[in-house]
Length: 455
Image (cartoon, rainbow, N blue to C red; front, side):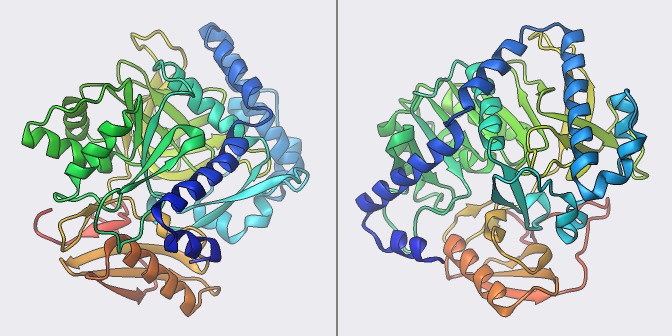
């Protein structure tokens, strides 16, 4: 825990609200400052283009990122004189890269000519931490895409909204409501994803109704737990939502059904990544539309060969917006399939016809909470190559770590502290160092595994 986090955790709730709001000012400038509006308006105008024009735009952006990479990025300079005028032929010359390769050889994947940047951390769906360097305008462009998606749902930036996410905003020691904090400058209430239980959900519902948002942005697992309670108890809330937006986890069919029943509105899922190399979002018909100005997606089989349309395989991403560290043919760790759009909504371009991965188990705490999406515990940590969390009993979890030479004992202590802060101290955390992690019989890796007989 750093100095500012320590101050926050020790502050009264009203002071915490002020601190969250002050941080909200920073986020607002970072996301919606100079350049955001221009990018947003340009994206909105491109929705009127013909299918042919969209495809030309898509290939133009693909060519631009390949030219940038072969000129300025060490890992790709050897391909500079091999590029032709055909973007789709060129992309096949680039090797598929993995998180491990980029993490171990990061300097070879950075465009040092782009000298204004920030660093964001991601652990991804495999629980493997990685630092991504992001160009100054990439975050604004990323939110321009997100807001084009939201605007299609009739959501505005002035709308009040609730967020359930991975950020830890409330101490584990807090046993009474409110289980949320306010970002006044962004009309946002941040609700804790880590305190949801049979006993606390009634307080969550009361807090949500009192705030009265126009939309909710949530991990599927968090909002599903509340919806399941609402449906089981026959509760009719006073909420009147435009939409519920989910992301960061696989939205399962039974979750969607429960959420839409409980809150009497549609759920729209968004697929993206902190690496800024993929963006797809659902329309009113439930189709995942890939944003052609954002990325180029491929699907490959086990041999690394591009599959036929509609065939499931590993999703390979090439991002367009991050000039500091553009990831080309990056294996993001998810599986799915791609096809040409024939959606009733009329949007052109490619669609994700299936989307797999991110199906992590919950951790069940002794006090009845189901905690999902634990990958934020890895952010900022070094010395971890891979990790997996296994719940062996109701009061014990084991974290299996594959270490790098940078690993120190402080990393284990920090990891234990982060887990305790989310799960409580009634669960014993064991750290075990291993040389490799086990996969399922189908070859998939699960970042969180529960060995309990039933959740």
